[in-house]
Length: 275
Image (cartoon, rainbow, N blue to C red; front, side):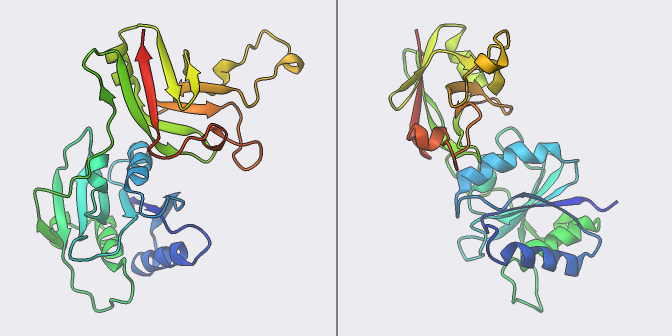
């Protein structure tokens, strides 16, 4: 069975780049099974890419092959690599993105890609050729030389004060609904909070309750016609256990989302203070 090939890029959908990438894959491997994870990554955003990949790849079967084409043009300082990590293959540029993805796992193998092309007309030829080689059952070691280290991109990590009563995190991702995801996860929240009361502050807004699901904000004992929760602010731990600031049933293109209505942007700080 041919493994799944996933694509994550910052190409957008207006131009022909996504179609060209798929065309090169099908030219090499007509039986390819391609799944799009996202083509709407903010251009060159390594942290956003890492958030998306970390939370998406684990839903695919082991042996899947993930092409990450964000900031992927090869140069002397941006070599192409392939990693075997947690039973998955990741093919990308050595630009620091993998150091943010492999938080909980160490790679079984890292290869710097070295291939001789007869056709250099496509700038992602390395990534496509390696992906198709692996999909055919090829040995990862045959596509280049093994290396032990990759570029490290220091993720903006939440900080804890000396008194252990405050966590300062940052916005790392804004989703399609305008919801704002921070780098404060449930583990560090519980570890530092130890069940204490708290206040979550994002700009001038404060939350003293964190929900587990969006619709937990609704009181279903009230008749539906008397409820009015649309657009209400809430904090929750999302399905990936990251602290998120949201507007209930928001739409950033019409009524607005937490990002624009609350004025929260990428890298803005969000603070949790325990009382």
